[in-house]
Length: 210
Image (tube, rainbow, N blue to C red; front, side):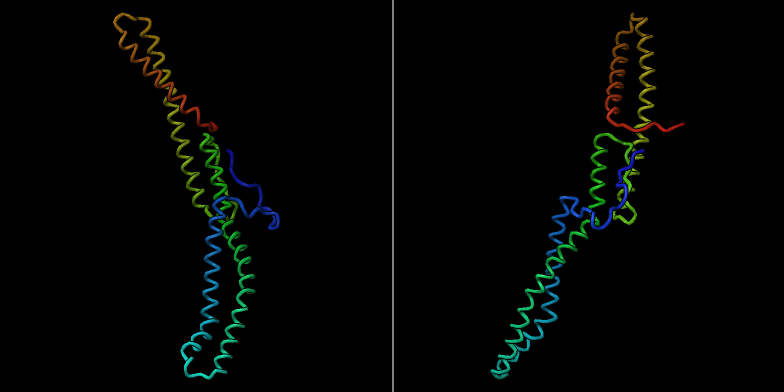
């Protein structure tokens, strides 16, 4: 039975971290969320303690104190840009790494689904140990197992019915008088059985060993 699975996890520096188109969208949204959260925390922790006293106590403080507070706020604001230069690339790397954890298994499941669409029912999904979406891969494998079982039963029943119909057609053809309507119905049933066989031929799977 074929397994849709990578052979072995490559070293960290040799891995492809961009593995799926959806990963770009998720990475952008996750990156924006992380940057926004970082800026919010930065503002709450550093800016507000300086800004609120300056606003609330503005009428009662001296010009010297106001100037000192303004200089502190300005000096603090100048540190935001270096912080952003650090936060943005770190956030981008974290976003790609986090989405890779999800998109890697999802990409393998998508590849397996394409094989199933082609009718390859011998395929089973095997994710690496520690990969996410293990449960989804298990559900898909179970669904394929059930489908194979159902198609196998249908094929066996269709073969048996077709053989019986062929035998009946041969018998009726030997005594055609008065059996024209029955012969037409048997031929129609035989053609329907053959169409079922043609549909089932799309699905390929190995026959279990006895």
